[in-house]
Figure (cartoon, rainbow, N blue to C red):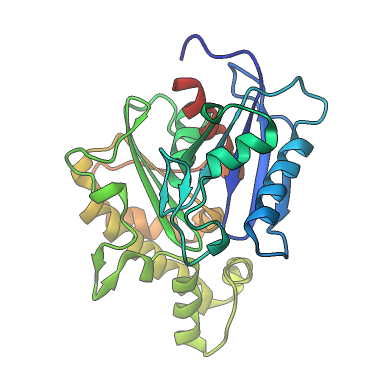
Length: 292
């Protein structure tokens, strides 16, 4: 990367229930202290926009005036226009031009605000300063509430290329009588354990219990088996140099990665776990901004 702006920029990761924000300080992609908060209790457009502004102002405390912001959002979202198309979550933002609204709140020009798919931001972060750094062809798979995916060639995200599914998304592709997200998500892990034991447990608790709970260990083994099959059948055609696994479930990679790698034995596919974790989308926003 060359000719990166020296002025700090705000970067945001808008997650499923919370938002993180930080200032990226410049060429080395180093982040200032992160501000993180759950969604506001008031479900209105104005309340959420004020929340984003205030969180950004908190993150920017003690830094020189920032020159703009890039926000990682889940889809569906018109990232070029800055308009949310989500109805299932944050419905108060549906159809709102967030670029204009946020620029107005910060006193910026609209072109100082940009948006990026959250899975794409995650992958760009790992390319810029994490587990995919130095690889020409990379795939990112985020494993959490849902299944996110992104593809990149020479540091640039691609959604139309041989081996890339429509829009770069794998979550809704048919898989073993359902779709990928039925097998690679938090609800999939919880449902699998419940089928075995009749007990409802969240993923974090299951990961902690797996060393002494055979049902939990078997649940993660099954998760890894499905992950390996998805990667082998749906991602190999892209011929990636590396596949980076991120998202909350990736923190338990030691419980499912061996099963995934067993499914991929002899394929030559290289799996790595995220090095940046929660910081990856924030760093990725900065990469996208500085490469623009």
